Amino acid sequence: MMREKIRLAITNAIREQYGDIAMPDFSVAPPENPAHGDYATNAAMALGKVARKNPMEIAEQIRSDIAGSDWIEKVEIAPPGFINFFLSERALQDALADLVARPDAWGKSDIGKGRTVMVEYFQLNIAKRPHIGHIRSAIIGDALKRMFLSQGYHAVSDTHVGDWGTQFGILLLGYKEAGASLHLKEIAKDPFVELEEIYLAENERIKHDPARRELAKQEFVKLEQGDVENHKIWQWMVMVSMKNLQQSAARLGLLPFDEHRGESFYEDKMAPIVEAALQRGIAEKTDDGAVIVDLTSEGLDEAVLIKSDGASTYLLRDLATIRYRKEHWDFWKNLYVVDVRQSHHFKQVFRVAELLGFEGVGESRHIEYGFMSLPTGAISTRAGNVISLESVLDESGERAQKVIAEKNPDLADAAAVARKIGKGALKYFDLSHHRRSDIVFQWDAALSFEGNSGPYLQYAHARLKSILRKVQSSTFESRASGRGKSKVEMKDVGMDSLEHRIAAAVLRFPETIEDALADFTPNTLANYLYNLAKLANEFYHSHPVMQEQDGAKKQFRAWFVAAVAATLANGLSLLGIESPEEM
Ligand code: ARG
Image (cartoon, rainbow, N blue to C red; front, side, top):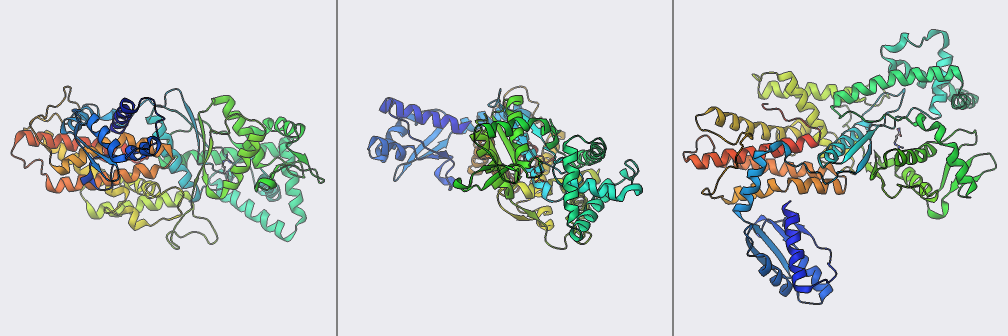
């Protein structure tokens, strides 16, 4: 990585001048204005404070130490002590040549080797239809898993399916009420229709007859105590719902999950935790028989482990989960991609786990995200219903198909391309926003071929690929196909300033992945790709490849196009977005 190289050079220069002075924190990043160089650092200012010296003087020392290197074109200093680095053409071309020789490896590393990252996302609830609220978790979680895998981490995904809890009491009671009219297998066609109806109808009954709430609670308690009939009904609900979960995951194009440990999995792992908490005085029994951890003095309210009716809580299951994951996977990080409404819940979980002395709490993080909603009327649903995940996917495919029919009616395999565009548009819309922001999904913006959208990036890539196809089929012998065995020698072809900017931008790809992973923010990568696509379009319009008469220049440009195309395709793939060759 270029950034690392510069960082190291700065550190060495400082060591040379100042011996083992405490190295201050400093940044190395591209300056806002590209005219100020490819990278800039505040190292001299940071050191100025520690060493009590004029930053301009320090900057000058660093500059003179580094300036001679062959990978640097020049180093400039700007008050009050910024140092700006301009990479040499040689350095840019060498790095690009490596990239073009092995495009598939571009962006990958093994930095994470030997480290296990748990990523939990797409936590569907059994017996409830997946809805628009589950989409962001799926898309963000899947992108994080892909990025971690690309850096050599052992990424383990888990859905933590919601298959336990008092809502099953309601379902069981309702199921029994529907009684003779229902048979476990017969309603399996669209089980969600039935299950939804059972759930809604029972809730309706409870509203009018509050005594039924107690009955529902008892049904769940019976389930927890191993009642055979209840267990059988529950199992059936899990089975049909899981089938649907797999289908939705496949339609979204998610990587396969490594685990589907539902909340029920932790049933027998909870009692020892409650015991330990009571024994060590962390938890207390209330008068009505509940078990709570009082966190009010820390502003975190009471954390309930066991309810007064004896039922375990969602929170207790999460405590058992942390412990299991640490023991079973010995994770380096444990990530929960869950919407922001649950941040209080996770604060409680982490705090109680800490009090209990669990390992792995410090490495556990709630990766919170904001809401995604649709403008009203964007999808028609049955009144009062949430928008289902399926209907969003259907809609995006249909809309993409219309766009393709309009833009490129002769496209071969239009249906398959439309699916890629539809899914890509949805994912990109989500991932281009910071995960914490609330977003209103706009079909037109998401599916537009212009602006910061999935199709815009896919289209930029497809255009570059079309140039490469033309170059390859012409008499011109291209080594830019990515299969070139030898390094392409480009010594005599100078770069203009746009080419320099694009090359430097391409080389920031690995650093961008690193940054995106540091804060678990896929939008860092999405927005980098958008800027690269914009540069690529500028290049496309001002630097013709096929028409170029100068053979060396033509080859150089083709080679350049290959580098940018590989970066866009690899980057999109890390976001879970496919790049059609044509569109
Ligand atoms: N199924 C839960 C819900 O719908 C989300 C699960 C989040 N993950 C966790 N480990 N608590 O609210």
